[in-house]
Image (cartoon, rainbow, N blue to C red; front, side, top):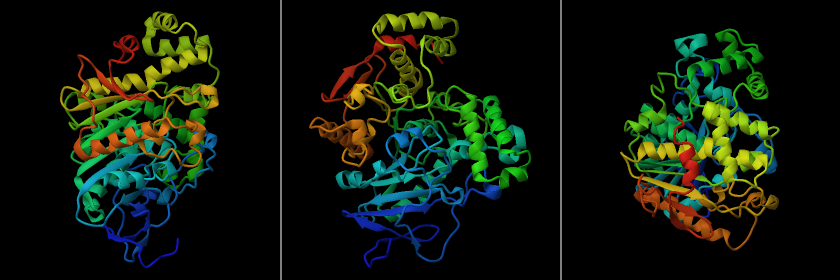
Length: 495
């Protein structure tokens, strides 16, 4: 993008950056917050970006973290991502003014199963948050998949301590960049709200229980995530060995020199082999970066900040109804899934679900069960762990999409266009459709997120275990008591 005389310029600890202005909002795109994570920095904790002398052009988005094409993004018509391992650790700032106003900061962590995505996606355009809330918005890129979560401690030794949490440590370094630089962009480093969805929500849940992140944020919003998403070292090591074998890596020298595509090929092989039935790459309970599982640390009082937590009602329809890699779904799939979660109680729990949802086909029943297992129960576990030590608020998004014949219902990620007030963004109507009922929901959610960033209160009652009051977002926006209590009870004995 060509320079204009009115382009905004801001100082950072590493050097000055030039942005652009749209609709009265200054944007600084793809500012590097870390040195290139290549060579001997590969699979290691990030370090701050090296200084530059000239004013750095930050008027265009740069490349994204290495990743394979996403079936969901392909469904929405997105092109394959342009990846560059060396230049992917960047962040984007949206601000109304380069002044000393010390506005609240909203720090966004994108989702994508820890293997896909970018903070530069058009849906995460922060201008409307800025315009409607007088806040500063920061969105980040961080290492994904094998590059961010390959646990190498038990393979290559202590030089690689923390390698299984490199992607989370990237997020911590980005938060440190905000602490050290955001005042130059009109933001207040003491009023940072971290928020994210899906793997981003799981990241927020991890940051709440991560010692290295404490003091870097003042409150948190966890969308379709929780603090229970981490892998034990033995499982993570097995995944790492599978990736290395496929990529032909046997030595540290191989590890630091292997082509990006070879490591991505190893990552693909892990998915094809079904090494894990859930997410093969996610934070690792390694005893160093994560000395405790995040949920246990939070239960003990870590991350003691106001927290909003919630899900959509029918999270898993995105994957079951649209067949995004779930494979054949039949009665045996139901039995296997419940045995995995409940052990010998699996058959009894299946009988209870079937009695409660008599008319559902196998795929629909799997979606209900998987929504509870993967999303809703971890969100409830986080709320139950947090409620004694901090203001905690719960929401449930229940509005159902009419698209695809209504099969998606209130699916995973459907709340994002509403939270970001982005219903008019190109391509999103394939999920939301169009109609007069949509914008009032967006107005309410968008305003609640802004209100929470400004005051620590989203505008509805706190979640307490006696009543479990929850804000429901739908064509009717209301506070409800203990939604779906029978399903919650079914999972009461699951860790």
